[in-house]
Structure formats: C-alpha cells, structure tokens
Image (cartoon, rainbow, N blue to C red; front, side, top):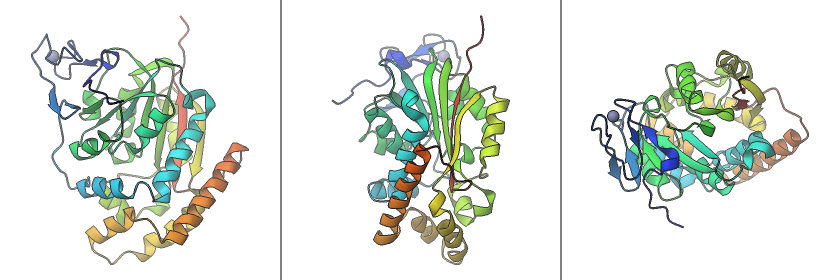
Length: 304
Ligand SMILES: [Zn+2]
C-alpha cells in the first residue's frame, strides 16, 4: 500500500523555528510563526544539509546498490532484530518508532516488516530519496536537533549515526526527550578504536566505541541498559587486516572498497559466521570483540 501522507498527525512535529506550533498533514504552515514545511516527493523537508565532504552522497548510492548482497547490510538487520528481542521487535499496534539518520531506509524497511510504524529522519536528501522507494512510513529531512514530536514515541533508533556527531551525548539526550517513559532506545556503532583507519576518516567518523563507552553514555542519560554486546565478531580479524592493507589507494577507491561486497565466497562465509554468531547470542553467548557495538536501553518510568 502506497502511503500518500507527508506527515501524519500521530507524528506531529513541533515547529523547528518557534517550537510552539504543531506541524502535520493539513498544518504544514506553522500557525504561530509562519514556518513552512517544504515537500520533496513524499519527504517533508524542514532543512537539508549541503553536500558535505564528510558525508558521501556517492556512499548512499553505492550502499543502495549493494544492500541485497553485502553480508554487512543483510546481517546488521538480523543483529538489530535480535538485540531488540521479542519484547521490542514485535510492537503493539499503534506503537511508534523514530529512526534518526535513516539514510536509504534499509533498516527502516526491516522495522516496518517487523510491525513498527516508523518515521525516518535524515539531514541528507539523497538517502531519503532512495528510502522513499522502499519504506511506507513518513520521511523528514532535518538535522536531528530540529526534530521534536508533539507526542513522545515508543522507540528511537540510531543505526551507525552517533559516531558521526561531534557531541554524541547531547544528540542522544535530545532523542531520549522524545521517548515515552518505559520506551526503548537502540544504538549501533562501529567498535574499537584499534580498528580506526582512513575508512573512518572518509566516512566522517569522529570515534569508535566499546561496550563500556555505550554503558557510560546510557548511565549519563539516566537510562537502564537492557542489552549490550559486540557484533560481527568473526569478521573482526578480517577487517583488522583489510584496514592495514588498503592504505595506499585513492580516497574514492577506498570508499568503493568499503561498500563493495567481498569476494562472493568470502561474503558467503561471513554470512554463515554471522548466523553462527546469532545462534550463539540466542544462547546468551557473546564474544568480547566485534566490529560493531549493539545496544538497547530503556527510559525508566518515573514514580508519580
Ligand atoms: Zn513556528
């Protein structure tokens, strides 16, 4: 079913200019200050970023091409559904989710298949235009500090986003403010500073994380950690070697190398190993290393 709504009332936004007006279908002009939501296809545009050196428009395109085959994109979705667990992965009807930095909508589409009503936001139009073809939910183009909802939501998501932000803590704080008490936040990030390479520089990363870093962030935000683990444990050695071998090639070739699926045989072996890792995790066995950190936390219910 094709969704023709730009901004449904259930996801009404606070006006990013005056923060008093409420913006949704039928009210795309702020009654208080006159701020107007622009439309790009079915994307609601509050503000969009210029093409910046630290974000790859080319990356969004390449990512979109390889999403079906590259083990990392396929398996990340499975790891995300697993970290959400049965309780969060299968929402009650009417439960709403916001994905910050949804880009091409690869994970957003998966969350929709799992039954979530999702709104995706991103500050870059190129990824959102790809997302518009694969997701049903509303899409908002804006930097995350400009996105605030009239009604708090049940789940907020950051899939490989906060490592790009200069101030990850304040971004998370803003997102947690959009969350209902008892609601969840799920975060994935690249792991281990020891895997830092020119890829991270090219992708505009500011840092990589350990599970302890995520645990500290959640603590500072007053959240209860529900699950916290490394993922892509078996590709860790391969990535470690690869990052040291591909040093002397051009920047654009490095970027392509990052998104290109590995040799089909290696790609298949890595998929099998990821499935084995999922199996281990389902028995509660987590390995103490990986190339990503996956984290789920809950906003506590305040006693009245
Ligand atoms: Zn306004």
